[in-house]
Length: 130
Image 1 (cartoon, helix red, strand yellow):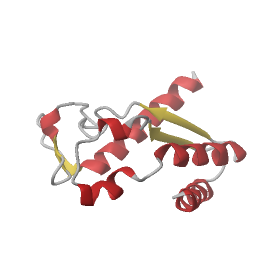
Image 2: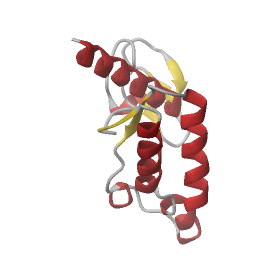
Image 3: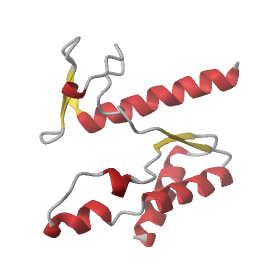
Image 4: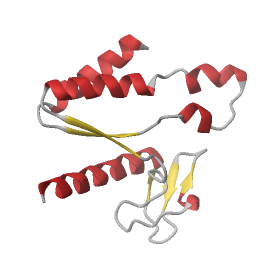
């Protein structure tokens, strides 16, 4: 996992270059919060070292004058980025589908999470610039 985390972090920082803001979910304690899984699925569910990946992205970003912020992961896949309507029913975890109960927008739930992280990053930059 260390080698994979190193490769991923290196590729991200190289791809996006200097002065990049990386917005990551703070997945501290994710293993304690995840739903119960079958024994045969346990390795895939709990083996990833999120903290180590975050640390590697952080130090490599700093070397390139970038920055990493870690944000609360709650609701990032349940909130519509545009109308900001947040509801548990917006997300179907089993099918990885998102459908806003307010405006009807549909997409992949992971894509919605990424869009929300981007929105948080834009807000962070606007606040820092003030």
